[in-house]
Structure formats: C-alpha cells, structure tokens
View 1 (tube, one colour):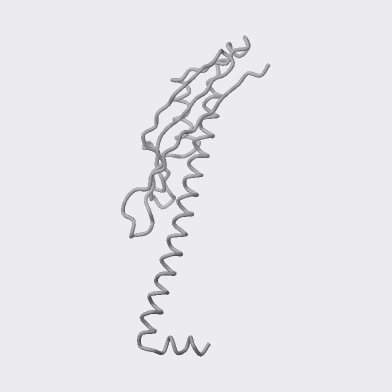
View 2 (view 1 turned 120 degrees about the vertical axis):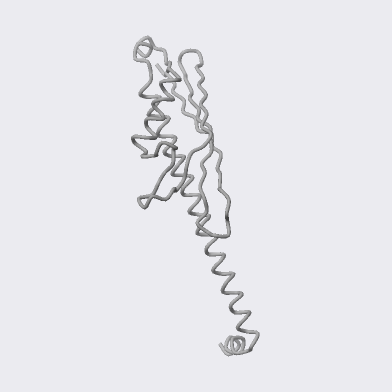
Length: 158
C-alpha cells in the first residue's frame, strides 16, 4: 500500500497512473464493442436462417409433395423470403434493422440466392450476402462487414 502511495504522490506517478487508467478504459471499450458486434451478427444470421426455412415451407409445391417429390419455385421462395424480412423481422425497405430511436443497428447488403434440386427428393436454397454495421466507438470510422452464406436443405425421407 505504501508503494502505491509513493507511486501516486510522485510527480511522474500521476501521468503514469492516468496512462494506465486510459489504457484500461480503452480495453474495456474494445471488449464491449467486440461482444456487441458479435451479438448483432448472430441475431442477423438467426433472422436470415428463420426466413429461409419459412420461405421454403411456404413455397413447397403441395402437388409435388403428394407425389413424393420435393420441389420449390425459386422465385416464389425469394419473394417469400423478402416478405418475411419485411413483415416478420421488421426490417425496412432497405433491409435495415432500425432501433426504436430511429438509429440503424445493422443492414443486409448484396443478397444473392441459389437454388439446387437433387433427384426430386432434396432441395437446397442458399442466401449469400453481407451483414454491415457501424461501430459505436468514435475511433472506428468505417463499416464492419460480415459475409455470410446460409443454406437450408429439405429432404424427403419416405
């Protein structure tokens, strides 16, 4: 304890103390920002995964299902996915998640879709794009981007 008092009461001790304090605060801010951004990415990926699953379920062709085939209309699935993002996930027209105060939290960019049917018993729908957000720390001025590729596969087992 005496060593700490001597360290603080020295003239150089104040400067060193505030440098250490600043570094600790900066490190805590960086850790908080890292976990905030990772949480946003997980939230966006969960919304996209739910959207793909719901879009496939809505657009499975019932007549084909009765004949033991699994086929989807890729255009209808894409439209159903966009409708889910707008209606259920509450994203705006630019596919942005906006907070209650009107600030953009994250957005989806460069969405592309691929569809694959295999042997009439399996279909796969894939969405590729980027999740973009901005940092709340003033030292980071650019956009933070997370590319993603999320797929959903439907398989006929009987």
